[in-house]
Length: 112
Length: 114
Image (cartoon, rainbow over all chains, first blue to last red; front, top):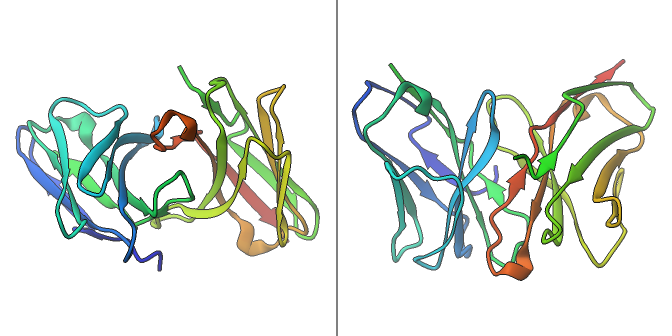
């Protein structure tokens, strides 16, 4: 158990819909990262938050957004969903400073 | 454009022998490198890391080697055990740039044969 909790574990939704994925980082970790893993792309970095503020952006689409709340949990919002958004979405946390991040078990999103 | 490349999608090694997983990178700003292990239906698990100021880091059966001039790193597992069968991801970050989001390779599936 990495200490990072993601909910829900599975999500099936229709195209055009909006979903929210939730992540609780390890106790004491200030950095939260979101990654997308699709079959052909491997693990793609989406966005990082540090202590409530956006720190870095990767390959995140404009239809996607995230935030980190005062209690340090984070949410990833995916809107106007397309079939190609079907993937595993991982959240990771770390104390910051580029140390090894600890990953949650992921949310498998299926868009039908 | 893939900045971190793992050119072997899979690797089969006999139990007890050495497993060597390779990784190449193109971004010269990367200064911190990590290896993660992933079992099916689980998140990646951090294994070992190395800073660009070092050329070797060892942790038990796992050793990571970094060749900065060649932009190449490798993970050695000695001796290989059945539980090592998993997908291994190489990752890199440019910590000096102020952000530490990781760039991952596509992974190598290591299969340990009994």
